[in-house]
Image (cartoon, rainbow, N blue to C red; front, side, top):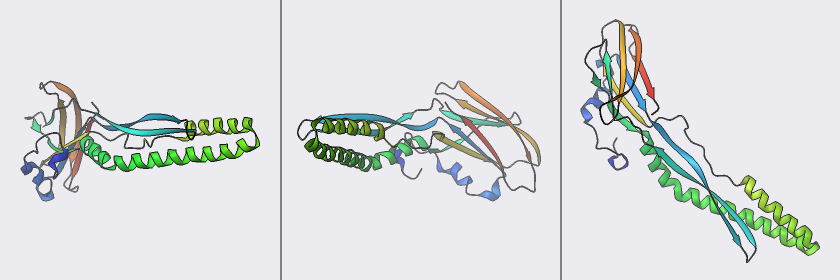
Length: 215
């Protein structure tokens, strides 16, 4: 979170985050994920230019965020006191800001691509019109149909990316431990609780506990 301008909240205290860099001081890493990453949608713009007789279709992607209803996440170990997980990343906000940077380039490429297709159709239509008005009209129609079928926005993205990431660490004794990762809304109401069991083995330097709540 070294660029606060792209995040929705004030930066958290950096002290809990520093623990993540001290691998020798913990043997359990807990990560929680909530929400969904932004999704792309297609918006179409269609233009008909009487002079010089060109049909253009622009298919532009737009990004939509899905704000998470989760306000904070806590975990309990062996039914002990709940410990908050530290927010470490807001992937949905970061993805949106990255897209905004790339948006002018995406739009420019879209307009150039659509214009070249329209120009190609117009050139072929003009040539066929010299032979036959009917053939020229058919060529123009086929060109329009071709644009409708081939002009698509690039909607690729991380469809399974969550919106936010939380983490915390523990130093636990050898043995089997029970974890409960709890997700809460702004009113402090419990939205979801995921229970997991893990065995701490001295031969393994790190045990990873992962949890995901899509809302």
